[in-house]
Image (cartoon, rainbow, N blue to C red; front, top):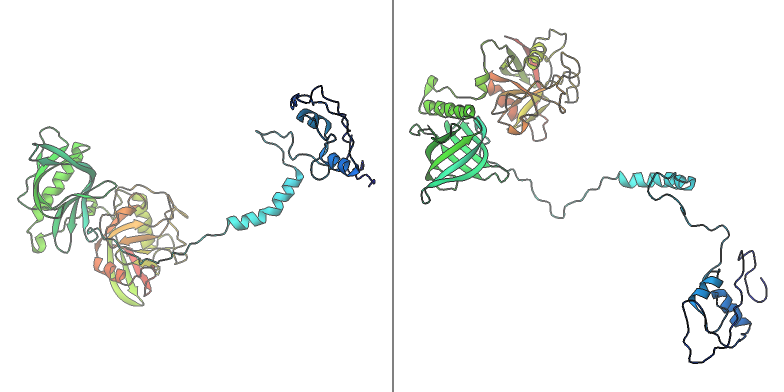
Length: 440
């Protein structure tokens, strides 16, 4: 480095900053022009130290300069030194478009990919500060069977205003309690689920069509929607007259069964409406840890879901060389269902149908309206094989997801015993095996 302290050509490529000349101004009171031209002042020389400091900042005049001259005559850096290999990153690259990445970027991306994948694949889990106990919420409908369920708009007659007032839109249900043997009408509003109709069905109630609409029915009942019973005149409007007639028919059938005792008191069941004398009957004999529990007789709805019914029938007879005999009920949850039929792995991960690995959903015409419904277990749409389950209570949330294809005609007490051997996690406390099965 030279003695004057200026950078060498190796350190500072190109032209060095040149010394600027100063001229004497015409008047000491003349303004300084900072835009295009410097004002003139007497020429002055500085010592070596001043020259070194000014050159390092690009200033060669002590006074009288403009920003334009400063930018024009200075090609150095205020701080540090210039680098011959310096260039702005991605200078001239296309902003909008598919620009080819540089090799350096690709290498950097490859080096950082492992760390990024590691950080992205980490399952983040937050432990709650206060652990709240699990609370089982009950609606009061758990022990009841659905006899009728359709969407409707409910109205209440306002005596003060002398007109009909809308109460809400939702699913209007007729429910039956098999233990207490009573029927009731229940309706909850959509989304908020607030009860807008809740009363028992009595023999004295009279169901009448509304004069202004063929799709609406009117009746009077002691309603308990708001807690205390109040005599209300209610009206339900359905989408079609056929649905309204179905409600009227179910309502009247419930009235006809009230007060019946003994053998005449046949329990009305919505699923029994699908029963046909021509439908096949099959049976399953079940044992718990080698101790026989009894036999379950099942009617298959071959007139509604023939392919699904035939699959289960053939699995019961074993006519295809494989079947349900010696298979287990691997998953039993109390007050929900008993699941079995995994004839290949016995743990719920296998299964085999008579049509191959899996077959499609036929339809969802039969609903999970109560206990004893036989339905297909699956892993999603069109994944039916040999696995099935029997409901212990109604399971509305399974409608339109699982194909129901039969019901328990006899031996529901055996299914209830199996349910008592289940656990919340699903693993039964005893090994439940189908010791024998076939067609009646």
